[in-house]
Length: 135
Image (cartoon, rainbow, N blue to C red; front, side):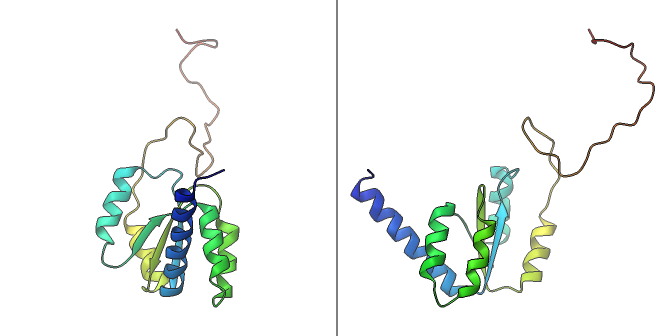
């Protein structure tokens, strides 16, 4: 059973997110799957005066959406609440926001456990190596 302090903190966080949902017209969701901390910090610096960014647990976001009954279109966001996400709250035009985010995109090297964004195809042919294990 969670303590009263934890419950109060969660309740206040749900209320804060509900206020953000009511205040801003544009809400963006971005996956944090391959995002690195330095990239996020750089993005936050660039968008500081235009976009409010916050990492929120999916269950807390669901409760905040339920509390925001005056915006029924927010229910559509619930299908995107999977995995680790960062939420972007802004009054910018959504296309401008997408353009700003696209400009900030950088390629990174693959790490163990990463899922490829596209199929990797190795063409058949001579590799110059004999068959069997390489020692």
